[in-house]
Length: 276
Image (tube, rainbow, N blue to C red; front, side, top):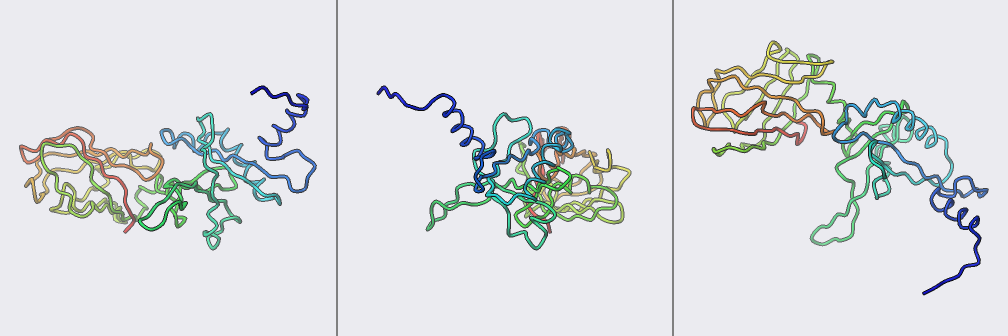
Protein backbone atom coordinates (compact mmCIF):
# COMPACT_ATOMS: atom_id res chain seq x y z
CA UNK A 1 0.00 0.00 0.00
CA UNK A 2 1.27 3.46 -0.85
CA UNK A 3 0.59 6.09 1.80
CA UNK A 4 1.20 9.79 1.49
CA UNK A 5 1.38 11.78 4.72
CA UNK A 6 0.94 15.46 5.27
CA UNK A 7 3.73 15.58 7.88
CA UNK A 8 6.86 17.53 7.06
CA UNK A 9 10.27 16.02 7.59
CA UNK A 10 10.85 18.45 10.45
CA UNK A 11 7.66 17.33 12.17
CA UNK A 12 8.63 13.68 11.80
CA UNK A 13 12.07 14.38 13.22
CA UNK A 14 10.48 16.10 16.20
CA UNK A 15 8.06 13.21 16.76
CA UNK A 16 10.84 10.62 16.56
CA UNK A 17 12.94 12.67 18.95
CA UNK A 18 10.10 12.72 21.47
CA UNK A 19 9.64 8.95 21.15
CA UNK A 20 13.33 8.08 21.36
CA UNK A 21 14.18 10.59 24.08
CA UNK A 22 11.17 10.10 26.27
CA UNK A 23 9.86 13.61 25.61
CA UNK A 24 13.04 15.06 27.09
CA UNK A 25 13.47 18.60 25.98
CA UNK A 26 9.74 19.10 25.54
CA UNK A 27 7.81 21.80 27.32
CA UNK A 28 5.42 19.45 29.11
CA UNK A 29 5.75 19.07 32.88
CA UNK A 30 4.88 15.39 32.36
CA UNK A 31 8.02 14.70 30.33
CA UNK A 32 9.48 11.23 30.90
CA UNK A 33 13.15 10.69 31.72
CA UNK A 34 14.84 7.84 29.87
CA UNK A 35 18.19 6.90 31.40
CA UNK A 36 20.72 4.19 30.69
CA UNK A 37 22.92 2.84 33.48
CA UNK A 38 26.22 1.42 32.22
CA UNK A 39 27.25 -1.86 33.83
CA UNK A 40 30.55 -3.74 33.48
CA UNK A 41 30.77 -6.50 30.91
CA UNK A 42 30.74 -10.01 32.35
CA UNK A 43 34.00 -10.92 30.58
CA UNK A 44 35.93 -7.84 31.72
CA UNK A 45 34.11 -6.97 34.92
CA UNK A 46 37.07 -5.91 37.03
CA UNK A 47 38.56 -3.73 34.31
CA UNK A 48 35.22 -2.09 33.48
CA UNK A 49 34.40 -1.49 37.13
CA UNK A 50 36.84 1.44 37.26
CA UNK A 51 36.52 2.56 33.65
CA UNK A 52 36.49 6.38 33.61
CA UNK A 53 33.80 6.67 30.93
CA UNK A 54 31.49 4.30 32.83
CA UNK A 55 32.01 6.20 36.08
CA UNK A 56 31.51 9.63 34.51
CA UNK A 57 28.33 8.51 32.76
CA UNK A 58 26.90 6.84 35.85
CA UNK A 59 27.60 9.80 38.13
CA UNK A 60 25.36 11.87 35.86
CA UNK A 61 22.71 9.15 35.90
CA UNK A 62 22.84 8.92 39.70
CA UNK A 63 22.46 12.67 40.11
CA UNK A 64 19.57 12.74 37.65
CA UNK A 65 17.79 9.94 39.49
CA UNK A 66 18.36 11.66 42.80
CA UNK A 67 16.90 14.98 41.67
CA UNK A 68 14.27 14.06 39.10
CA UNK A 69 10.58 14.61 39.74
CA UNK A 70 9.55 13.09 36.41
CA UNK A 71 8.45 9.55 35.61
CA UNK A 72 11.67 7.71 34.78
CA UNK A 73 12.44 4.72 32.58
CA UNK A 74 15.82 3.08 33.17
CA UNK A 75 17.69 0.66 30.96
CA UNK A 76 20.87 -1.27 31.75
CA UNK A 77 23.63 -1.55 29.17
CA UNK A 78 26.97 -3.32 29.27
CA UNK A 79 29.87 -0.93 28.75
CA UNK A 80 31.16 -2.51 25.54
CA UNK A 81 27.76 -3.33 24.06
CA UNK A 82 26.16 -1.24 21.33
CA UNK A 83 22.64 -1.52 22.72
CA UNK A 84 20.95 -1.70 26.12
CA UNK A 85 19.21 -4.75 27.51
CA UNK A 86 15.81 -5.04 25.89
CA UNK A 87 14.02 -5.17 29.23
CA UNK A 88 13.30 -2.04 31.23
CA UNK A 89 15.20 -2.14 34.52
CA UNK A 90 13.14 -2.72 37.66
CA UNK A 91 13.91 -0.71 40.78
CA UNK A 92 14.58 -2.89 43.83
CA UNK A 93 12.45 -0.81 46.15
CA UNK A 94 12.20 -3.61 48.69
CA UNK A 95 15.72 -2.56 49.78
CA UNK A 96 14.44 0.73 51.17
CA UNK A 97 15.50 -0.20 54.73
CA UNK A 98 19.07 -0.55 53.45
CA UNK A 99 18.93 2.85 51.79
CA UNK A 100 17.81 2.22 48.20
CA UNK A 101 16.85 5.57 46.77
CA UNK A 102 18.83 7.43 49.44
CA UNK A 103 22.39 6.15 49.39
CA UNK A 104 22.20 4.21 46.14
CA UNK A 105 19.82 3.00 43.45
CA UNK A 106 19.39 -0.72 42.86
CA UNK A 107 18.17 -2.37 39.68
CA UNK A 108 17.43 -5.74 38.21
CA UNK A 109 15.80 -6.55 34.93
CA UNK A 110 12.72 -8.57 34.36
CA UNK A 111 12.62 -12.15 33.10
CA UNK A 112 9.58 -14.35 32.48
CA UNK A 113 8.66 -16.66 35.32
CA UNK A 114 6.29 -19.60 35.05
CA UNK A 115 5.19 -22.05 37.71
CA UNK A 116 2.80 -24.99 37.48
CA UNK A 117 -0.22 -22.85 38.30
CA UNK A 118 0.87 -19.34 37.32
CA UNK A 119 1.92 -18.02 33.95
CA UNK A 120 3.20 -14.75 32.62
CA UNK A 121 4.75 -13.55 35.86
CA UNK A 122 7.85 -11.40 36.03
CA UNK A 123 10.86 -11.95 38.26
CA UNK A 124 14.27 -10.44 38.73
CA UNK A 125 17.07 -11.95 36.70
CA UNK A 126 20.15 -13.32 38.46
CA UNK A 127 22.05 -10.15 37.53
CA UNK A 128 21.19 -7.29 39.85
CA UNK A 129 23.14 -4.09 40.26
CA UNK A 130 23.62 -1.23 42.70
CA UNK A 131 24.58 2.25 41.49
CA UNK A 132 26.35 4.46 44.04
CA UNK A 133 27.00 8.19 43.96
CA UNK A 134 30.61 7.68 42.83
CA UNK A 135 29.32 6.17 39.59
CA UNK A 136 30.47 2.64 40.37
CA UNK A 137 28.38 -0.48 39.94
CA UNK A 138 28.22 -3.38 42.37
CA UNK A 139 26.52 -6.69 41.78
CA UNK A 140 24.07 -7.59 44.52
CA UNK A 141 21.86 -10.46 45.51
CA UNK A 142 18.07 -10.26 45.70
CA UNK A 143 18.38 -9.24 49.35
CA UNK A 144 20.93 -6.54 48.60
CA UNK A 145 24.14 -8.29 49.67
CA UNK A 146 27.13 -6.95 47.76
CA UNK A 147 28.47 -9.69 45.53
CA UNK A 148 31.21 -7.44 44.23
CA UNK A 149 32.60 -6.92 47.74
CA UNK A 150 33.76 -10.51 47.65
CA UNK A 151 36.17 -9.69 44.86
CA UNK A 152 38.19 -7.78 47.44
CA UNK A 153 37.71 -9.69 50.67
CA UNK A 154 39.63 -12.87 49.96
CA UNK A 155 42.51 -11.71 52.11
CA UNK A 156 43.87 -12.31 55.60
CA UNK A 157 41.23 -10.11 57.22
CA UNK A 158 38.21 -11.86 55.74
CA UNK A 159 35.81 -14.28 57.29
CA UNK A 160 33.60 -15.85 54.66
CA UNK A 161 31.91 -19.23 54.70
CA UNK A 162 30.15 -20.29 51.49
CA UNK A 163 28.87 -23.38 49.73
CA UNK A 164 30.21 -24.18 46.28
CA UNK A 165 28.93 -26.70 43.74
CA UNK A 166 31.36 -29.06 41.99
CA UNK A 167 31.66 -29.16 38.19
CA UNK A 168 34.15 -31.55 36.61
CA UNK A 169 35.19 -33.79 33.76
CA UNK A 170 36.97 -37.00 34.71
CA UNK A 171 37.28 -40.70 33.97
CA UNK A 172 36.24 -41.18 37.60
CA UNK A 173 32.95 -40.43 39.28
CA UNK A 174 33.89 -37.55 41.57
CA UNK A 175 31.33 -37.85 44.38
CA UNK A 176 29.23 -34.78 45.01
CA UNK A 177 28.59 -34.89 48.75
CA UNK A 178 26.45 -31.87 49.59
CA UNK A 179 28.56 -28.82 48.75
CA UNK A 180 32.20 -28.00 49.02
CA UNK A 181 32.28 -25.54 51.90
CA UNK A 182 35.01 -22.92 51.71
CA UNK A 183 35.86 -20.98 54.85
CA UNK A 184 38.35 -18.09 54.87
CA UNK A 185 39.30 -18.00 58.53
CA UNK A 186 40.70 -15.29 60.79
CA UNK A 187 43.80 -17.33 61.58
CA UNK A 188 45.20 -16.88 58.08
CA UNK A 189 44.04 -20.07 56.47
CA UNK A 190 41.41 -21.41 54.08
CA UNK A 191 39.41 -24.48 55.04
CA UNK A 192 37.75 -26.66 52.39
CA UNK A 193 35.23 -29.34 53.37
CA UNK A 194 34.01 -32.11 51.04
CA UNK A 195 36.60 -31.35 48.35
CA UNK A 196 36.44 -34.04 45.64
CA UNK A 197 33.44 -35.51 47.40
CA UNK A 198 34.53 -35.64 51.02
CA UNK A 199 37.19 -36.90 53.37
CA UNK A 200 39.67 -34.99 55.47
CA UNK A 201 39.07 -31.25 55.81
CA UNK A 202 41.75 -29.45 53.81
CA UNK A 203 43.60 -26.45 55.24
CA UNK A 204 45.58 -24.01 53.12
CA UNK A 205 47.87 -21.61 54.98
CA UNK A 206 49.01 -18.25 53.68
CA UNK A 207 52.43 -19.47 52.62
CA UNK A 208 50.59 -21.47 49.93
CA UNK A 209 48.42 -18.56 48.76
CA UNK A 210 49.23 -16.09 45.98
CA UNK A 211 47.64 -12.62 46.11
CA UNK A 212 47.48 -9.53 43.93
CA UNK A 213 46.19 -6.20 45.29
CA UNK A 214 44.54 -7.85 48.26
CA UNK A 215 42.80 -10.57 46.27
CA UNK A 216 43.69 -14.23 46.24
CA UNK A 217 44.67 -15.23 42.71
CA UNK A 218 45.60 -18.86 43.43
CA UNK A 219 46.28 -21.28 46.26
CA UNK A 220 48.00 -24.65 46.49
CA UNK A 221 46.74 -27.52 48.63
CA UNK A 222 49.77 -29.47 49.90
CA UNK A 223 49.73 -33.25 49.60
CA UNK A 224 49.13 -35.41 52.64
CA UNK A 225 45.36 -35.47 53.06
CA UNK A 226 42.78 -38.15 52.28
CA UNK A 227 39.56 -38.39 50.29
CA UNK A 228 36.85 -40.96 50.86
CA UNK A 229 36.88 -42.14 47.25
CA UNK A 230 40.47 -41.77 46.08
CA UNK A 231 42.44 -42.44 49.24
CA UNK A 232 45.58 -40.52 50.22
CA UNK A 233 46.47 -37.52 48.04
CA UNK A 234 50.18 -37.61 47.25
CA UNK A 235 50.43 -34.54 44.99
CA UNK A 236 50.13 -30.80 45.53
CA UNK A 237 46.96 -29.44 43.91
CA UNK A 238 46.75 -25.84 42.70
CA UNK A 239 43.55 -23.84 42.18
CA UNK A 240 43.26 -20.54 40.32
CA UNK A 241 40.69 -17.97 41.46
CA UNK A 242 38.79 -16.54 38.48
CA UNK A 243 37.10 -13.17 38.97
CA UNK A 244 36.20 -12.54 35.33
CA UNK A 245 32.59 -13.73 35.40
CA UNK A 246 31.26 -10.73 37.27
CA UNK A 247 29.70 -12.50 40.23
CA UNK A 248 31.37 -14.63 42.89
CA UNK A 249 34.91 -15.97 42.39
CA UNK A 250 35.16 -19.31 40.60
CA UNK A 251 37.84 -21.75 41.80
CA UNK A 252 39.39 -23.66 38.93
CA UNK A 253 41.84 -26.54 38.94
CA UNK A 254 45.07 -25.08 37.54
CA UNK A 255 45.86 -28.10 35.37
CA UNK A 256 44.70 -31.71 34.87
CA UNK A 257 45.74 -34.05 37.68
CA UNK A 258 45.81 -37.76 38.53
CA UNK A 259 44.85 -38.66 42.08
CA UNK A 260 44.87 -42.00 43.82
CA UNK A 261 47.15 -43.20 41.07
CA UNK A 262 44.24 -43.81 38.70
CA UNK A 263 41.63 -41.02 38.66
CA UNK A 264 42.30 -38.49 35.88
CA UNK A 265 40.57 -35.18 36.57
CA UNK A 266 40.76 -32.89 33.55
CA UNK A 267 38.57 -30.05 34.83
CA UNK A 268 37.25 -29.27 38.30
CA UNK A 269 35.46 -25.98 39.07
CA UNK A 270 33.87 -24.77 42.29
CA UNK A 271 31.05 -22.28 41.73
CA UNK A 272 29.33 -20.24 44.41
CA UNK A 273 25.91 -21.42 45.54
CA UNK A 274 25.10 -19.75 48.86
CA UNK A 275 26.54 -18.22 51.99
CA UNK A 276 26.57 -20.37 55.11
